[in-house]
Length: 217
Image (cartoon, rainbow, N blue to C red; front, side, top):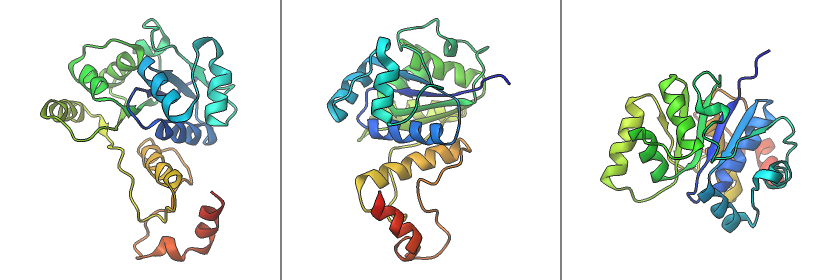
C-alpha cells in the first residue's frame, strides 16, 4: 500500500506543546507522519522544553521530545527544498502547521515561500488537500487578518490556538490536549484526548470515568 502521511510543520511561534500533542495523537492513531521543524521552531522548542532537534540525530531527539517510538515517522530538514513534500506528486493526506507564525501565514498566503514548511503548505493548497493552520499569535494586525482570509478562501482551515474549558480540564496539559484533539477532529483522526460535548451542562465534572482519567493525567 502506498504510504500517504500527514505532514506536520512546526514553526517558531510559542506553542510547541501543541505540536507535540498533535504528533502524539497521530502516532497513537497509527497514522503515517512526516515532520518538518523550522529553524525558528528549534529555538522555541529549546526555550520552552529545553530540548533540541538536530537533523543528524532527529530520531533520538524527536523520541525524547514526544516520548514515542518514532521509527515509522519521516523527518525532512526544513532547509531541504528538494524534499518529497515540496512536490505535488508526493501524495499526502494533508498538512497541519502547529504552531503557525504570522510570517508562515504571510508566506503561504502570498505564495512566496522560503523553507520546506512554507513550500509544503503551498503545495497542499494547490493540490486541494486539507491544510490546518494553528495560529498562535495575539493580537493580530490587519495584514495578518487579510492573509488568513486569503488562506481560508483557498480552503485552509484556520484554527486559532484557543482551547475551551467545558471538557473538564484541570491543568494546562489537558487544555493543550483539547486543542490537539480538535485539530485531529478536523483531520478525521480518532483519539480520546478530550471529553466531547453531549448537550449536558457540567457533564465533564460529573463523569466519574473521565474524572479518574484527568486525575491520572
